[in-house]
Length: 544
Image 1 (cartoon, rainbow, N blue to C red):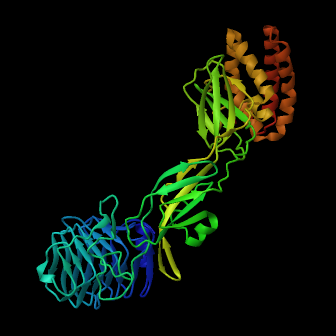
Image 2 (tube, rainbow, N blue to C red; image 1 turned 180 degrees about the horizontal axis):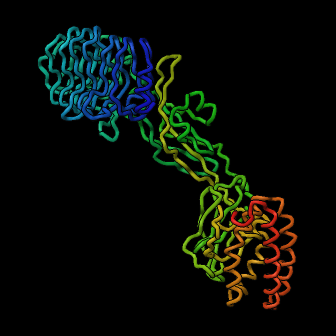
Image 3 (spheres, rainbow, N blue to C red; image 1 turned 60 degrees about the horizontal axis):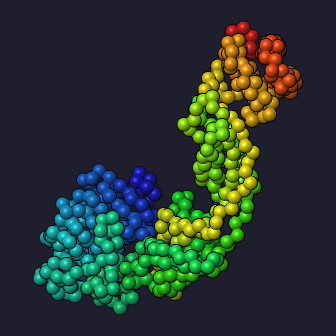
């Protein structure tokens, strides 16, 4: 769900429904009209709610017995407005970071609201209360201007308050203490507690998760923050060791290293693979509390890819390269040189086309290609919390795998080399690919040997004299039109090839006898063109 989709989902929700929000930033102004509606984030830190219009409350609660759980509310004038429901909502395991001029929660004329296990940080006013029987319990209040502005009745117990709030120094509250978050920086927003936090073990229960704040109590999301890989050491292949940073969250029970020889994270999967999906699809090592793992089963034998087949189309001051996808290839390397000049190279990545720009028309270039297979492995480290015997939670994958190349790349044999010139071609009329003239259309592709023979004759002889250039101009105006007819009617191709073969043969035999050949080729083309157009009944006068 994102933004407007959330509103649509909420409009379709009825009494007793639960709406789950996956990690993301949602700009919304939600109104809970029905009773017993639950809004629940999957990952508190990364499921962010902001006001869509900047001034209206992020969430307005009108229905009774609502529940709002596991969100981070940011940068809005008012986070949650509870506006006169008969029975107030439960707000638990949320982070309220609205800003220095803003209010986190406002309660108006309701009864029995519960504000439990939330973290309030950096707000002008954390709670404004004009209601009765409000329970404010197991929260952390940090870096605030005013804690509570109250004209109603509250039960305030077992909270952790950063200022010396003497009025609340009772009922199990801890005042004038430092929470010690993992990293409250706005870019990190990690309000898990470190092991020496004064807000740990602050409850009237005997729960294993009795800390104050958004990551305490039974309802916290139990998803540790992502873990960063710091280095990979390569000893003697196939053995490598992966190292990572320690989580600041004291609650974690261990780490896992996932790895594979293909990318682990993808935008299509996003970060939401289940534990079963991860372990079924990937290799995994459970390292316990260790911050490193050694892998000794990596494949280091890359298969040699076969040579790709290269095709080239000339264009104005550039060459357009295409080739087939080669099995086991992870990238391709293009070589080219002008005449007998120095060879230039570049790697294209794992693609099957590329344009060489910045070339000069009328200069001959030789181009060839190799396929490359570079073995690589991809790594992700997660932290996990063993919550109960049948419940298991671990970090989401980060959105960038750590990649490591293994061994040296294996290179294919070279493709065929192609000698070609860039050229400015303006078809008349313009055809879809800009290069489809009669011979190309008849023989099926630009690199056909027969096409290249005719092209060579054009470049070496027709372009060098006035008569030849006049013929080229005539052909460029009328040839594409004939080619479009051939492409539209494939049945014509065998006939046109039969008519062109004598030209191809004569081009090779009569290259040195230019005038005779020119007369011959002009006569043949003047014969071919009417034959092609006359076979299309739509191409009479006025239909061209």
